[in-house]
View 1 (cartoon, rainbow, N blue to C red):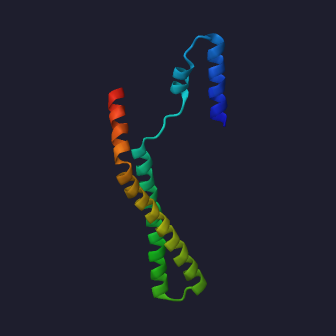
View 2 (tube, rainbow, N blue to C red):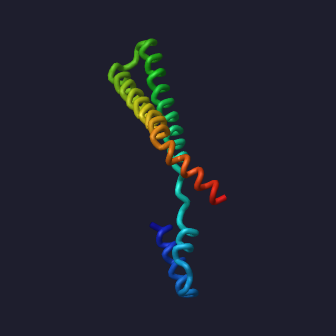
View 3 (cartoon, helix red, strand yellow):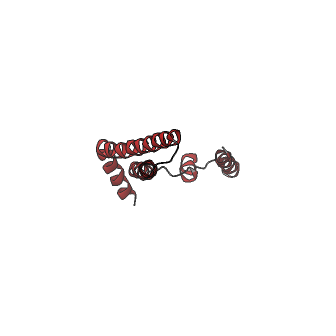
Length: 119
């Protein structure tokens, strides 16, 4: 909200100083950069890997605790559930990455071509 207010103030000041200014060009310059599809997909892969690793680690350490014995069964069940849920969420992000990569291949190529044209 603060960033939007600052951009609004910049545009108003620019209009006051030069009313004939091209506002579309100014807005394009001060607007935040949009992430490319490839960047968005890679972010999903990164978070999927992190979350899946944490879930797997919790699950594996819980298996070790269960093997050693002496742990509270309710705590073990809760940790199994948390580890399994986190691992599942991580896998969902990873699957989303691969499905998105396959479905958006043409759009990513077009985006890359557009960037090469602009450069």
